[in-house]
Image (cartoon, rainbow, N blue to C red):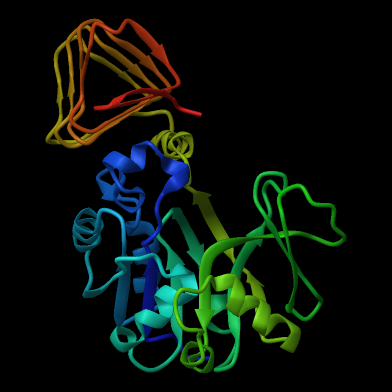
Length: 311
């Protein structure tokens, strides 16, 4: 199959696993070292040659749209006042997408995948899933393939299985014929997959590269601190006063760290301020909050509406 000319970024979720952080900042717009989270998936679509890209929106639509524009590229937006599901959102976006196959990506993943095998697979009447070798079948669901690359089953986390399990990366190539016959919204993508699977029209290809899922506040902190590679990062528009200690942490745009503050393995974002002798370890502080005099705080999510366990 030729490289797709259309790209679709699924960014219209509720972000329920990211709560209560997603009440303040929607998951696709979370700051990852001066880039929004959705920038990674958009970059994959651009590298694949997508000339036309659509982003669907639901919760905090203005913030997600602004983050997508900041990430660059010529984009169109599909507004969903009511959630339509993965397949429903794709069906509703067809007038914006135009003709041809569509490369679909999820907005809540970060990585650097080689999608060339995905782009080379399939046809007009198939859907092809980009898979990686499974790092943790007990944590995430698994995909099983036969010897010819047909999807045989989807297994819940921890389910017993024979053969090698694979993990779905969130990227898939939807053939033009499948796109034309999508069910009317609302509809989950699993409905389309299960219709294609018995016909041998649901395929999987194993791709190489790095991949991280960012579904929870703890996973968000883990991603950012992993990208730091034992260093720290301070946005040019952040302020760290003399005497403030930043250890393996990220301090985002508009944030402030006081002179007597220690921030370790943590993320500050959304114009958060930490002052008054605080010592943070493995925390996320987000939104217009001024944390002062809190002493030592570990593994907490700190928001304008209060403090919550990070996991």
